[in-house]
Length: 418
Ligand SMILES: Nc1ncnc2c1ncn2[C@@H]1O[C@H](COP(=O)(O)OP(=O)(O)O)[C@@H](O)[C@H]1O
Ligand SMILES: O=c1ccn([C@@H]2O[C@H](COP(=O)(O)O)[C@@H](O)[C@H]2O)c(=O)[nH]1
Image (cartoon, rainbow, N blue to C red):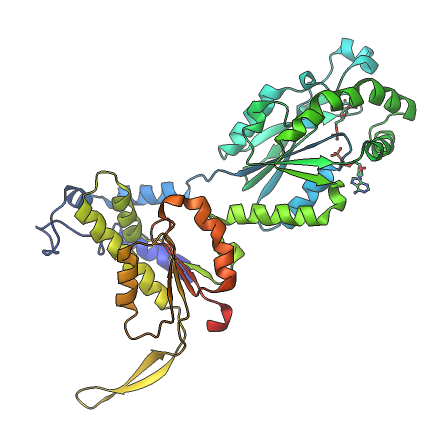
């Protein structure tokens, strides 16, 4: 049985196991002060534990939403495709604002040359919001398919878009409506010269969208350019990143992809850094995390459980250090084949450290040569900052990185020490 399924099987078989939890004075841990919270834990049933675990396992993580705007034929789709390609190890979906064109009535179709496809009212923004809301909620959606030749939606077919880690919403006016902007975690504006865009548009619309050059030029002068000046360009100010030259700008796209990876990696650092280790979460560990997060926990209980978590993190981290075989002679004269740490631990970085973390580390490290303990006291600066600091810390100097509170614990070892 693979290691992971073995762990799951053992967890399932033992149900709720709180060997690490501190029980009240009437239980098997007489030295611990009594606690109402701890005694309520004793009545925790295996089925409740199982459903809590499955709820956590299926817990929906908010996807990262990227908006990509810019004038017609600026290269929005091309940029999106490049981002999607580079994010190959994540689930990414593309939603086009074009899919939400209302579709012309028979009357409007007769005078299509007078229809302004570049005005915000040409889109069904309510439907777009509904679809994006569902996707953000982890539900799949059926997105309409728009036919640029007939200016209508296909009445029978839809494109099924599944819930994903990253949702990219692309279109000329995706920054126009504040409600749509508010869905986005990152806004990109593709900035390409107007003459290049017009040349591309003529080629594309004549080749792919069944137009002739005259109608393209007529529509461009009458609607496309004025709407660009009135709606698209003014929305550029909302962009977090402006990409000049669109898909030709590989540097900008690489930087954007790196940023998205870092953001996604806040949840899954192991995907980015091969030397980061995360302790497998068990009911015991999650039970203690639950206790220390409970605002009603007493101070002695908080200290007791957080100290225990800290020790688990530190001990697990030390287990990753390099060692050599070592023989010792026991007091009875027999030889014991043991191990000894063989390299000097040159730095320990403790994220969100407190005194108890430092003490636990020093206690656990007795007998290990520690060069330096570097303490990060980031406590109240928040999660964002801690993770943003991570890449520098990793690249430069630290050997062990421990975070007992935010997650179960992270361990970092340079590859030459493993
Ligand atoms: N960097 C580029 N160099 C040459 N042609 C490009 C470039 N980027 C896009 N195109 C072409 O221009 C047209 C419009 O590009 P597209 O990415 O679909 O723009 P948008 O989605 O902004 O309308 C397409 O035919 C595409 O192949
Ligand atoms: O029926 C239609 C619908 C839209 N348009 C034009 O399309 C562009 C937007 O698409 P891009 O891919 O971003 O260029 C917009 O400027 C509309 O004018 C159309 O011509 N006919």
